[in-house]
Length: 111
Image 1 (cartoon, rainbow, N blue to C red):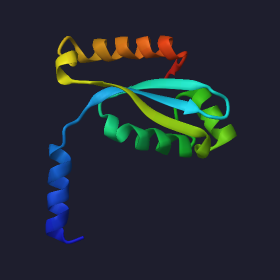
Image 2 (cartoon, one colour; image 1 turned 45 degrees about the vertical axis):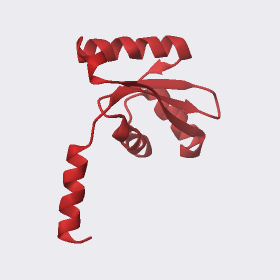
Image 3 (cartoon, rainbow, N blue to C red; image 1 turned 90 degrees about the vertical axis):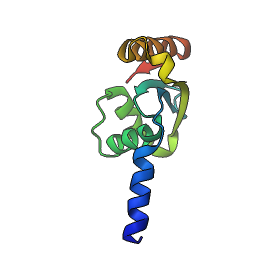
């Protein structure tokens, strides 16, 4: 990649709209579910997969399922996108409440 192209790509990445929200991880082998919150849904799957591949995810039951069944047994999905207007009432409070809602709704463990 040329230096100019790289600079353009970096600038575009920095200017992209970041969307916060709730995501779900599902073990297809067992049906277990884990839900989490992310300040940037576009990057969270890479981060979670990285920690799981390296055995360093802090969610012990999630890491154990990953170790037992492997990456191919897992699915990732966004379950709710939160716009800035929804987060105006207090980002942390809203994210925590939405995560609790989805954990209850889907029978998922929070990660």
